[in-house]
Amino acid sequence: MSPHEDIRIGTIVPAGPHTISYLEQIAPHGFESYQLVFDKHLADVDLNQLAHDVKKFLALADREMVISSLGVYGNPLEDKQTQLSWFKLIEKAEAFGCNMVCGFAGRLTDKPISESYGRFGEVFRPMARQAEDMGVRIAFENCNMGGDWEKGEWNIAHAPVAWEAMFSEVPSDALGLEWEPCHQMVSLIDPLPQLREWVSKVYHVHGKDATVLWDVIRKEGIRSGKDYVYHRTPGFGDTNWSDVISILRMNGYQGTIDIEGWHDPVYHSELEMTGQVHALNYLKTCRGGPFIPNPRMED
Image (cartoon, rainbow, N blue to C red; front, side):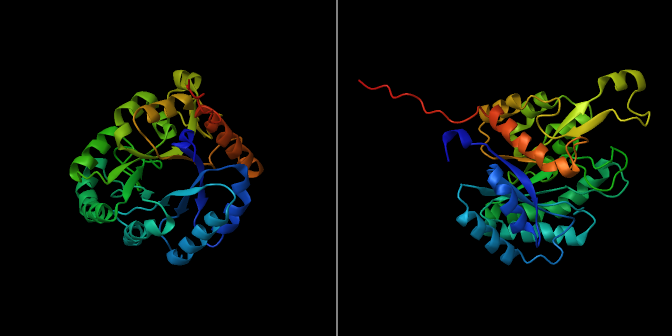
């Protein structure tokens, strides 16, 4: 790995029976990392077999690639299977060659976010202890999943005031954020000042952007039922990812940016991988392009 790849650019891969086939098809495009993502829980996936197959694939690959993290995206505050899946992934992360597990923080359904803090502590205090013991970090996705402050059914970790309360409830260095600009822009938050403020707690970055339709907002507001923001693949949205990567680098981030596809209103269906590979190359350019070694200063 060159010094320029301190931040790897990768993508999300569904975890399950077709993982290796999927990896074999997309690896030639030049992805450098992969986040393996489960749904609400692990179902009947054999983690030991999957880890073996993934590590074998990486060992045989003709380029250096890594598993950046594992993800499970259910509601651990209410769904026991999701909660158990978190514990299992923390236990098995090392088998995949990674030290990161990501997902939603969960939520008490249709209760104000503040009413979930106690339950969050009950669930994630023992999980944080397990993660600390195993050298694993936990990163919370910052998506609101259609919820707001008063109601929702998935995730409380979508507002900075909630992050402060969560990390106060469970004050562990094992807990951090899975951050991306998109979800902040949906809330009309400027993502770059937020990143500068919270970068020390950003453990994983999703490559997803947004396009905000300010003309619609100025005319119709955000409660008219009309679309005022679109989720976008990086390279097609409003964010300057050179700024994102600069902020990450200036603050010592050495993780990955894994592209989260399947949301772009244009580059989807048959154009999905076209959009993702464009994002891959765009983000590599924002990282500075190919690594060029300095000339030697010799007498």
